[in-house]
Image (cartoon, rainbow, N blue to C red):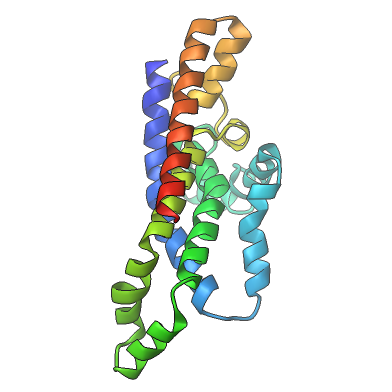
Length: 214
């Protein structure tokens, strides 16, 4: 149980760092940079929110499995496969959770008054300066709300993680997978503790997200 707690935090923190880098930049591009195929990109990013997690996990296996589109090249050149490792749990948590961050951050960035951006451009600021000193500071509360929601979602990821990383005790067994295993084996005390802990963290995340998204 203690291993599952540590691994879950490790996976969620690692996935969240990746989501911040990828999610905020993608949200900015979707919000401020019209380009051909933007609706298609938005649809592909949103799909993991709609699809059953097991279907998302199946797609990840097709892409990153040992014989997958990308995974086979990695295995041929390195002899290493992401399957059934904690890195697979990070990948699954990232793919399933990053749409929450992108959607929330995009809405926050789009809410920044365009007149302020136009005034900054008229005063000679570059786009990079506008992003760093105006857009992101004004949208920071919404972005932070998205980060909190994505972090909480990554803590509770089950289906895609089970498909890609498996439920290997002492190796890939995160808290949701441990709850499943404890419930199956009748260890209700351990399952109840982890359920209450995840429920508390999820409720706290919703509270913080609502507070910062105002």
